[in-house]
Image (cartoon, rainbow, N blue to C red; front, side):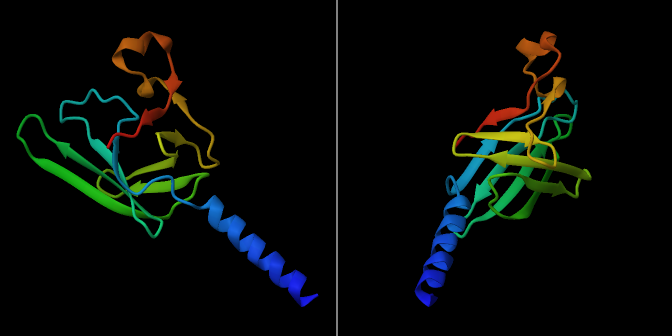
Amino acid sequence: MKKIFSLLIIGFSILSFAQSKVPFTGKRDFMIEQGASGTGTPSYYVDVKKNGDVYFGFVQINQANGEETKEEINAGKYNANVMKVYFKTYNETYYIKFDKEKIYLTDEKGNIKKSEDCCPVSEMDKGSCTCESALYE
């Protein structure tokens, strides 16, 4: 009985570790929402560490005066379902999920959002687009 219990615990441990395995390590840039602001569109990035910690950040350069605004936050351990990202600078909260190639803007439950803010200029007439971006090295 002890052996079966031990095997079950080991099995669940392996399964939970496999589900939380990070899709990549290192820094990737992305652009989910298309900006049209006069102060410059922020350049967002995700930085995944080997231990599973995930950092999100942005750099924004004011086009008028060259002033740089940036922030980086630790969003916790990688979660394939949804991660909460809160930037204090602009009091913005995002829910995001990502894999090896793409990143998605979601609701709190991990459902991918659609919005006109996510449409590239060439597709503005669509009304709403899937809020996703490729991840760029």
